[in-house]
Length: 418
Ligand code: RNT
Ligand code: ZN
Image (cartoon, rainbow, N blue to C red; front, side):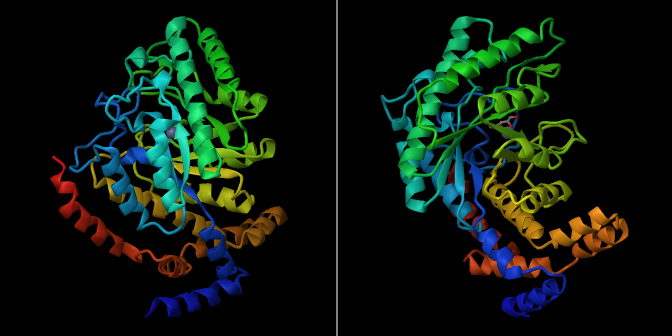
């Protein structure tokens, strides 16, 4: 049966429970997700290969990873052509385009290094988000950056943060879309610390110094990302959830919740409404943690749907800034992007197609029986027919057919990267 016919039938079924599929499709086409550049090259960047540090790891050795800005941009183009909607890209400071004789250490990077990215984004109508890179650098080898007790090292990283703020401002201004600058530092200790207070005090002071940079707020939003532990930094993380939640609310910056950064049964979906009660905006790193913060590709699983539901039913599409954050080096990297991005969009559609008001009413009436029945029946409503229709309408391949394009590109381009 053809896509339009299937869609018309689905539309009727949803109408019977009070859901308007046209409205859902319109809303979905406005959703913008930040696609992280670092899936394309296992978080390597362009500063000259250095091992990944900071307690994060990309595992796998699938061939074809991007080695240059041009390759990464080409790969991102390939991925974006298979994802419905207009999105943003997320860069790390380590992805500056350093031409011959133009390289600079992290504390000295300037907007010029990111000009090719701005041009790339402008031509494609994409937004750009940005991240200072507080890892994979000799001065981060100790596992400490903004909380380092050595004033010289701490200063270096403060200057990096300040440099990144100017770059974010430049990006936001050039593209005329606010750039989200997210601060994550790996800082922590492998074993039980003797002093938990002083590193946090130093982190707080360093962040305050970075924020004291003169910058135009209309072009930059700042977020801070907490974590519970990292590999080699198991016992103590300076930037814990409580630390950043309080920091963000007292400094007027955003909290960023990474779905891999909490205890294994703790979910970020449950945190979204709590934060929305106290702040106008928040940011997300959607990832999938398997037993630890392993950064697996985002699947269409229960927690992804819960995250999407919290955004939709709290009317927070313009309040929650969604970004993805994973890096799987064991599969085709372009497919990894496409699967995660399409799944995030798919989950948003799933949430948009729920009779949210009716379900909330059941809850407030204490009618948990019907609440459960409807929630469960909805799982096999013809949601896939609406999704297929949406993909077709947005001009991207329907269902798994997109992989053919990736495979062709792999055979033609990726295999030659040796
Ligand atoms: C690490 C954080 C952080 C990084 C990226 C590369 O645990 O999630 O966001 O993954 O900045
Ligand atoms: Zn993250």
